[in-house]
Length: 160
Image (cartoon, rainbow, N blue to C red; front, side, top):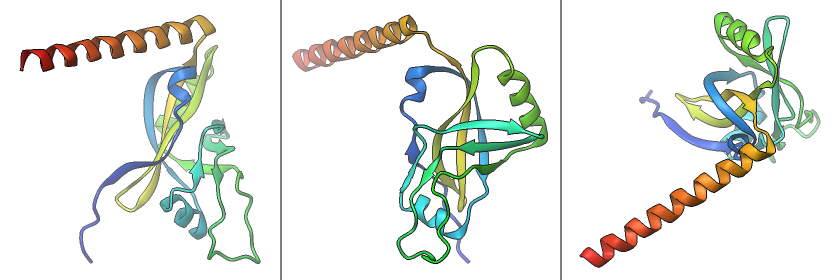
């Protein structure tokens, strides 16, 4: 067999996560999926915008991750598209996440799904919830950065 390529292009992304949370640390986790679910994810038919992760009995699960049923899949055995799916991480990482997520205002937030070496991976982050004024401050900072970049581009055009 040939060498599998690293394909880290996001297949699903949670763009609201950086708006709603300060992401302090990220972790990579594998996912326990069925055959038709991985085919749907490879086709880009997954959504993690409303998803969240919980830790129970030393295991981590993702909830509300929507994976659309695969069209050519087994129609006699349909699975729930938003079922809880187990994530695969080292025990030390899970216990570290658990300790940090227990603190006030911290959540485990899914950030993106991608394929690495043929396996579906989920990038999760430890996030602290933003207050409304933090969101406005972030938006103002982003707008000012955009204005600065636009002015610098215009100056470069004038110089040339």
